[in-house]
Length: 450
Image (cartoon, rainbow, N blue to C red; front, top):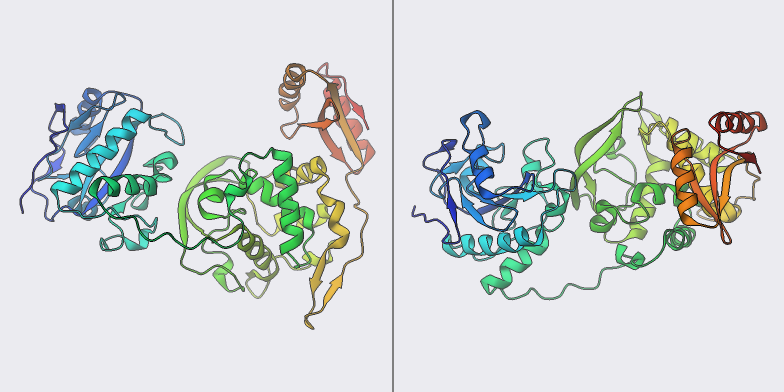
């Protein structure tokens, strides 16, 4: 095996944290994020400290300069996997200190140049990326890997990870790889259809999509509000890159229920969970990837109606719930979400956009296959809305919202004409609304019940 190093290097500090020589030809690229916008000298210094027990073949500093930390003939200690590091050139990129660990344009441009150079010198004809950790080692199909696949880490951060396809495309253009035949137009609605819309417009578009594509019998308001909350109005990494608008993981309730997911397409990312005390923690998980948003809507409803908990339905009785609050409460009690405030968040979204206005149109399919119209129901709650001020000037409404949120985390601004009203709760029992008003007034916040 013959190896060389990149001529793009402007600084060299060889780390003792390495295995010499590597035991495999170079056929893989593994890109990492180095937490902190620092220069190559600082990066190499830390990676050369024996106590760090870590290193990388190359580092890229905040100004785009490239440093050599472990020669290509040797294996770096970078990806929490010996076999991967024997196959791969590892590259640490200076990034922000917090998620999504963004790298600047200088770093990104140098990364493209460096990976292109590595591929040319190591006879890697094409850079391939499918975002599938099941293809590790199948360099004929995928020759890029991610640190997060080998350890419970955020690396390379969602900023870089979501751009691996772009990196591969740019590098391949530099390598002279002919663009592949344009893929057929994807079926159904893609996340890009929501680009440029306000949150209110997105909510309305989602409600119409649910009305058109969901005949499960689950209330339109519940499905739409879950979609808004889980996907951040179709803006999350998972929604944009996988058309997954409900946080549906690959493995759910034994996967014994009917599904429209193909069982293969996946998207790996970090996700926030909460324990019973409301304390947040993060885990890495594989999520379902759909060809369109319509499939995400259908799969979500199929899951709620077919998921099993042992010998019984996990969400048994869901279609018998008379209103959105009872439906979402049953869903939460079936351990759909770990967020202790999940029910109130969903109800607040429903009220904010009046999503329940079409719930009387909901249809479901009985065993005969014929549609059955569910009569309109009058929601039992909420009835009493607590309002903590109404403002015309944005600055004043935002200042009041910030103050109210210290007491009521789920408070939000409800727009009524030119007025921006601070909603601090909605209750089915008047006494509960009165208690909320009393709380706010005890902190010098003028509140009323509407």
